[in-house]
Every structure is written in C-alpha cells, then in structure tokens.
Image 1 (cartoon, rainbow, N blue to C red):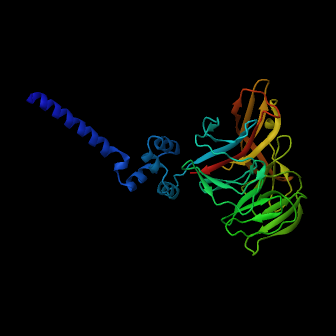
Image 2: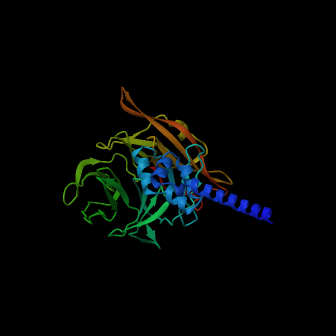
Amino acid sequence: MKRRSGTIQGCSQLGLRKENKTKVCGLTSLPVDVVTNCLVHVSRFDLAALAMTSKAHRSLATSSSLWDLRWRMKRIEPSYYVCLHIFPDPVPRWFILPPVKRQLKPLLWLWCTESGSSFMVVDRGIFIIGGLVNGKPTSNVTMFDCFEHAWYKIPPMKMARAFASANVIDGKLYVLEGAGMTLIPQTGQRSTIPAPILGIFCLYVVDEDRQIFSFSPSKLPPMFVSCGKTNSKPGDRDDWCLIGGFLFSRGARRTILWCLPEEFDWKEVNGLEELQQQQLVEYDITKLSTNYASNIVIFWNAGATESLELLSAEISLTKIEASQGLEIRGKIEWSGSVYKLDYPLSESNRVKVLFAASVFA
C-alpha cells in the first residue's frame, strides 16, 4: 500500500510540476513590458495567429502600447486593404491583398459597409463615412482598426452624406459632397462652395463646371478661392493619387493620367501600351490607388464565357526630362487576376472596387 501510495503521490507531484512549468512559460505570466518588447519584433501575420489562440493573447497582441512601440521602433508593416461590392450581393466585403501570393484574402471580421460611403485612411485605421441606408444618406461614421482588426463607432456627422469626397488637411478630416457645403466634424463649421464637388485633393477642389478652387482651412471661416483655371479633362476624379508631387488619375481606354496640382493640365502616362492592348480586358480601369512603395495599383474587370475576374496591376513611375517637356513613364511591375467568380461578367454580375489602399499597422 505504501508503494502504491508513493506511486500515486509521485504522479501527483509530476502533474504539479507540469502545471507550474506551463504557467511559468506562458506569456501572461511575464511582465507586460517584457512581453511588449518581445512582441514588437513579431510580424503582423504572426501576431494575428497569436491573437487567435486565446483572449489573453489577443489582448497582448492588439494592445495600444504594443502598436505605439512598433511605431516608435519603425516596426509597423503595410497591408493592402480592399473593399469590394460583388454584384448582385447588396453587402460590400473586405479583403487583404498579400504582397507575395496576390489573391484577395477575405477578412473574418466583417462590417456592413454602406453603399455610397467615403473612405479615408487616418493613422492605422480606415474611416468609413456616410453612405446610403435604405436609399437615404446617413451621418454614420465608423473606423476599422487595421492593427486590432476591430470596428469602432465614431460620433456621427452633423449632416447626412453619401458619395462624398473626403481628405485630411492639417490634421482635420474634411467631408465634401455635391450639396455645396463642407463639413468639419471637429468644429461643425461650414462654408459654401459654388457647385457640386467631383473630387477633393490636398488644397484643391474641382467642381462640375471644371473650375479649380483652392481651399484655405486656416481662415475663419474656411473658404474656397477660385484659381482662375479649369480642369483640362472632364470627368469624375474621385480616386486621385498624389505621388512625388504629381497628381494621378484614371483615364479612358485604360489610360492613366498625370498633372501638376497647380496646373491641372492632364497628360497621359507613357509606357503602358501592354496594359491597353490586352485582349481579355473589356472594361476600363475601375479603381486607381497607391501603395506603400509609391507605386500605382489599378483594378479592372475582365470576363470570359463562364467566369468573371478582377484583374490588378502594380505600376512604378519614372520622371523623364524630355526635349518635348516633362514626361512620366510607367512600368508594369506585376499584373494578374486577384479574384475570380464562376459566373460570366455582365451588368448584373460584376465587381466594383469601393476602396483600396495601404495601411501601416
């Protein structure tokens, strides 16, 4: 009996030692500062995997102190986020486009993004502003935290808006829409503009009459001043990109346009004949954006008899001082299909890119 009792006691002690060993080696048993200094060197994807193992690990992997330290130590990493409206599905969906295997990866944490919303990247988050709810504009504002992969409700705007233009100027988020008013959510100040807005970028605004206005946020009240110039090419420029002091936008027949912000004399980016001559391409560019490498990323639809594909290309840019004047040349660094559906492309079956941008987190 004593031997049996000793065996039982020995097993009990062994089990206790295993339990203590697990407890000592767990991240939650270490000081928070020690864990934070270790996790700051872990990649975003590994942090995401760690966050899925337990609530305690998720709290460590998504803590604000960890993100702040990663920011100070320049350990933040860019991820390319894409929001798609896949018709006829009424609800938009969110994806990440990995840098190596370039196939859109759906996010597990989904939010019902409204149709007609505006998007703006601020720090590590994506603000989703306004939109249509049951066919009517809404004042709702939400923020997707790209580090925590969590959604937060932001205090609503004072005015409901849909299909608006948005940008950050001097640390303030401005939302402009075709009703002829500007809204500064932080102060609620408004000022009139002469006509509906087609696009906003930095301190310049283009109205539907192609007139160019500069915006002076430092004046009280903020106001628009005519530049005495007109936009050389009409059209909706809601996806302008500023790269190296130049504005870029999508043009007709799968062309990319550029201009100097103070001139708005749009010219075509050269060197992209391969893109324009692709036989499978049936539609123009549907979205133009920029990534962390200051390259242009574009999307467009293509369709075969039994399938629908969303194609994408990454384009690097070079400025050339030619005899005829300044020239911008593009080089296709990568091109291919990033999303595919098993039904043919049509007006009712198509993919619209609502948002695409790099976010550092």
